[in-house]
Every structure is written in C-alpha cells, then in structure tokens.
Amino acid sequence: MAAPSDDLKIEDAINTTCPWSGQPIADGSLTFYRDAVVGFCNPGCRDKFEIAVHHFEAALQAKLRLEEPTGQGNRG
Image (cartoon, rainbow, N blue to C red; front, side, top):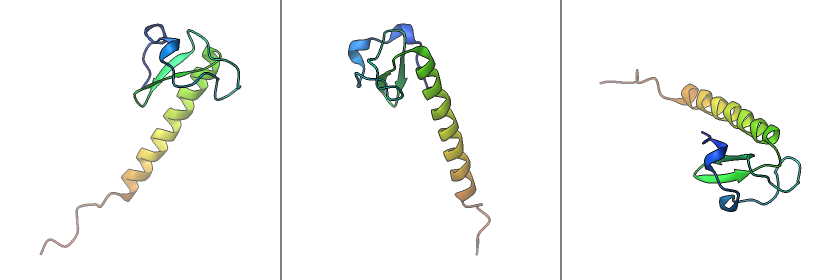
C-alpha cells in the first residue's frame, strides 16, 4: 500500500493538515494511498493510518469472500 516516505514529496500531498491531529503535515510523514500522496504531522500518525487502512481492507475482503457465490448452484 505505502511507498517509502523518502520517495514522496510534501508538495505532492493532497492535504495540508494531518487528518488525525489537524496539525500541518511534515516531510518524512507521507504515505501513498489510492494513487495519492497523503501527509501527516509525524510518522506515528502516518503509521496509525496505515494500520487502520490495513484492518479495514482486511475486513472488507473477508466480507466480500463471505458474500461470494459458492459456484455450487443449479448446473442443470
């Protein structure tokens, strides 16, 4: 999901304030999410975001697997 923070540029971030704290974003606290650079005020907030996204994505994938047809329907 995330690219190394060192490869990302603060001027490419889609936000100017940290979504967790509301503080200005900082170099070294960036991640790549859904084709966009997202900034955070510190690496701790960035890491918290990455952990949360991982949990949400895993839960969504589990839900989708449960909803998949089994393929054992009526085969005439």
